[in-house]
Image (tube, rainbow, N blue to C red; front, side, top):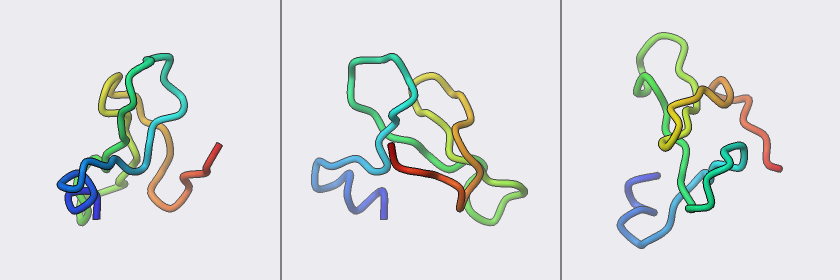
Length: 57
């Protein structure tokens, strides 16, 4: 889903915890199928939430 949205010029889910002023998304790490996947800020590399526990702000 993220790749399809990116191809349309959209990013999802957006990072709302990073002080960066540039709009940027979160990514799943490790990729689906890996052990203990988490949402990670693609700018800071900080783990934001476990997969399934991401909340909107």
